[in-house]
Each structure stands twice: as C-alpha cells, then as structure tokens.
Image (cartoon, rainbow, N blue to C red; front, side, top):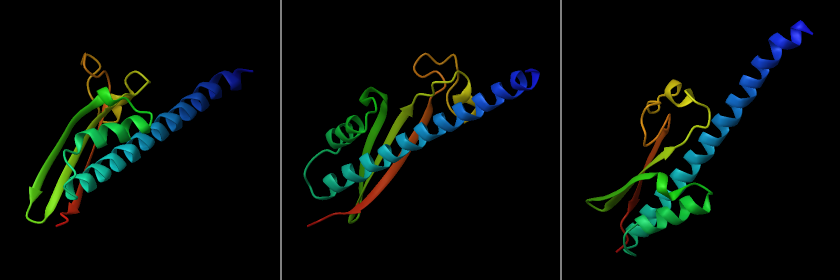
Length: 124
C-alpha cells in the first residue's frame, strides 16, 4: 500500500502533463489553421482576415477573447498574417514552467503565447 502512495501521485502528474500538452498542441493547430485561412482570405483580396481568424478560432472550440492580435502586412507579391493567441493552462504554475506568463499577471495567469505567421502569394 505504501508503494501505491508513492507511485500514484507521479503517475497522476504524468497523465495530467500529457493531457495539458495535448490540449496546447491542439490549440497550436487551430492557431496555425486560422492564420493560414486568414492569409488565404487576405491574399485573394476578400477583405480583412480578422473575422476569418475569429471564426476559425471559435470553430475550433477556443475562446476568441484570448486572441491577442491579428496583424497583416504586404511584402511585394506576398501577404503575411500573424495570429497571436493566449492559451490558458489549467494547472497552476505549469505555464511558467513552459515559458508562459507570470502567475500574478491578471490578464493571463500562466498562459502560453501561441503564434503563427502564414504567407501567401497575392492573387491578381
């Protein structure tokens, strides 16, 4: 019984870490997709990519309020769309260990900033 008391917290911590890591990877995939779709929308001249990015984020079951910024730029024949998203980490202190925000930050306690820049060639 003493062995279970020693091993069970370790196994629980490993399992929780795997779940949090998986959720962060899922959020990163959604951020990449939103940046890519926003850049495609902007490259085709269909307007501002922000609404497309917000739609993809919401469709991916993430909070659109956590979008920190959507920036766009044109460089020659290419458009660049950068999406920055604050992913919440549900384990206190884990965000700091993974390079995220401080625990005393009221805007995002232990959040991890996910960002991606997508580049598309402008269509004429």
